[in-house]
Amino acid sequence: LLDMALDSTLSQPCPDPAIVLTEREQAVAMLLSTGACNKTIARELNMGLATVKNHLLHLFRKFDVSSRTALAHALFVRQQAEQHLRQ
Image (tube, rainbow, N blue to C red; front, side):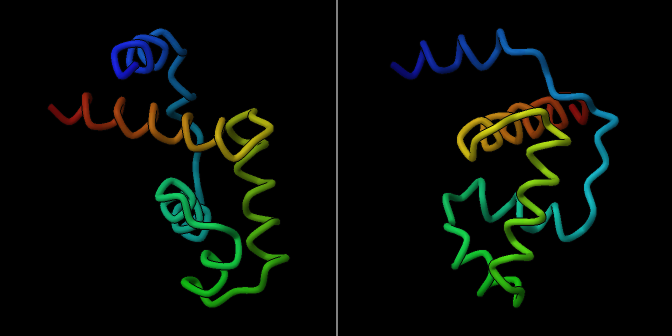
């Protein structure tokens, strides 16, 4: 299963590296990628639920995805690409 997941990840196009995230979007994205729910993200970042949802909507649009899972995947692919470029 892990091999299948990695194969599908590697075959996916890398999100546009020119996508710029605000500091708050980066913080929301980091917590989302750890599996945090909206309430946890709001509590951790000291913001309201509506603000978390607003940041998530911006992230969905920037990465052209429609679900938390797809966003987490896009963020993972982007992180892997950034790490690869640093090596």
